[in-house]
Amino acid sequence: MMTGTTTATMMTGTTATMMTGTTATMTTTGTTMTTERRVGLTVQNRLTITVAALSVLTLSIVGLILYTVESNNVSSRTTASMSQEVDEMRTFSENGIDPQTGRPFASVDEILSNFLAQNRPDEDEVLFAFLTDGRVLYQGEPKGLLGSSGEFEKAVAGAAENGGEISLTIDGVEHEGFVLPITGTEAGAGTTTDTQTAPTDSASRTEGVGEVAGGAAATNGAGAFVVVHNVSASHSDLVQFMQIYVVVALAAALLIAGLSSLLARRLLSPVTELRRTAQSISGGDLSSRLETKGHDDIAELGHTFNDMLDRLEAAFEAQRRFLDDVGHELRTPLTILGGHLETMNAEDVGDVEETRAMLLDETDRMGRLVEELLLLARARRPDFVRFAEVDLSGVVSDSLAKAKGLGDREWGLEVPESLSFHGDRQRLTQALLQLASNAVEHTEDGQKIVFGARDDSDSVHIWVRDEGKGVPDEIAEDIFDRFCRGSTDGAGFGLGLSIISAIAEAHGGTVVLDQTTIGAQFRMILPKGQK
Image 1: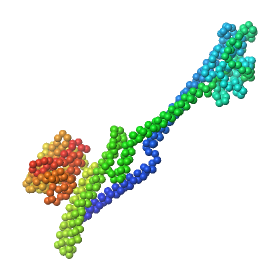
Image 2: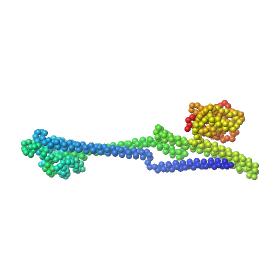
Image 3: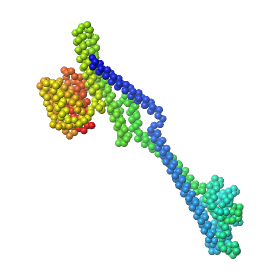
Image 4: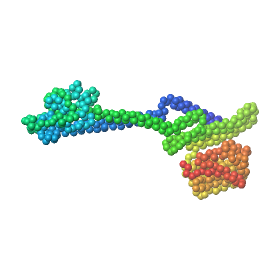
C-alpha cells in the first residue's frame, strides 16, 4: 500500500506542478501582451526616427562644413582682389610716369585720376580716388556708400593718414575695404617746380569715372586711394546655394526616412510574425510556425523560434498523453480497489486477507504502470540519454547474460568481435532486456531467442529474434503504439515497445519489425556519430 500511495502522490504532485507551470506561463504571456500594448513606439518607428535624425544631423554637418569652406574662399578671393588693386596702385604711383605721355605725373590728383581711368574693378568692387581738391572719383557702383550718412567718409578719414583696412555696414550691407594714402612724393621730380610744362588732358583720361564733391573732409586735403568690396553681395550666391542645399537636404532626409521605414518594415516582418505567433501560442495553438527566408540573423532567429515551438509542442503533447494515459489506465484498477473495499466483509478474516492480497497486487501493478508512463514522459528530455563511447558487442553479450534468467530458452548471440558505438549503455541494455522479456512472453520453453548486432557505413543495427508465435498482421502497424498488446495473455500494459521506440528515438534512430517466416524480429537502427 505504501508504494501505491507514494506513486500516486508523486503523480499528483507532478501533475499539479505541470498545471501550475502552464498557468504561470499563460499569466506571464498575458502580462507580456498587456505590456506590449502599452508601448508607444514600435521598433520600426524608432529605427525610422533614428535614421531620419542621423540623416538630418549628417546633412547639417555637411552643410555647415560647405558653408564654412566656401565662406572662407569668398573672403580669400575678396582679400586677394583688394590686395591686387592696392599693389597695382602702389606700383603705379611709385613709378610716377604717365604711361601715355612718358612724362612724370604733375600731381597726386593726376596719379589717382589716371589710375582709376585705366582700371576696372572686379564684380561687387568699387574703386575710389579722394583728390586733394576735395573731389571724389570712383569706378564701379557705389550703391549708397557716398550717401548722406557720411559713415564711409568717416571710415576713410580714420585710416587716411596711415592707411589700412576698413569695415563698415551701411543699410544692412556689409563692406570691407582698404585705404592707401597717396602723397606728393609719388609724383615725378617736376611736380612742384613746373606744373604747366606737362599739360594733361584730364577730361579724356577720366572717361567712365564718376565724380562727387566732399572728399576734403575725409582726407584733410591729402590724396587717397580706396578699394571697397561689397561682402554681402559676394556672399549672396553662397547664401542662395545654401538655401537650395537646405531644401534638397530636407527632401533627401524625408526620402531616406521613407526608405528606411519600408526597409525596417520588411526586415522586421519576421519579428512581427514572431509576435503574432507568440500571441497565438498564448491562446493554446502550438501548430503555428514562422516562414523563414534567407540566411541572415533574422532568419536564424526564426529557425530558433520554430525549434523552440517544436520542443514546446512535443512537451505539451507528452504532458497531455501522460495525463490521458494515467487517467485511462488508473481508472480501472482504482475502480477495482474501491469495489473490493466496499464489498469486503471486515468480520471475515479470510475475505480480508484475500482482499488485502488482491489490493497489494493491484497497487504494485499501478506502481509499475506509473513508472513506465513516467519513463515515457522523461524520454523527451535532453538528459534522457547520456552519450559515451561503448563496446556494443559487450553490451549485447552482457544483456544476453542477464536475459537468460527470464526463462528457459535456447539463447543465441550474433555479434562481431569488436563493435564500438556512441550511445547510452544503460538505455541500450534496458531496450534489449525489454525485447527479451517480450520474446520470452511470446515463446515457449526450449524455443530459440537470438541477440544480434552489426553495423554498416551509416548506422548500427541491434536486434532480438525469436521463434515464437510472431506478431499478428492486423496489429503489426500499430505494435509500437502505447497500450498496444500482441496478446491478452500477459500481465504487461502494452508500453514495452513504446519504451524501446523512445530509447531508439533518443539516440536519433528508430525501431522496426522485420518480416520473418517464423516468429518475430525487432531491430533498432541507430545512426553513428550521435553526440
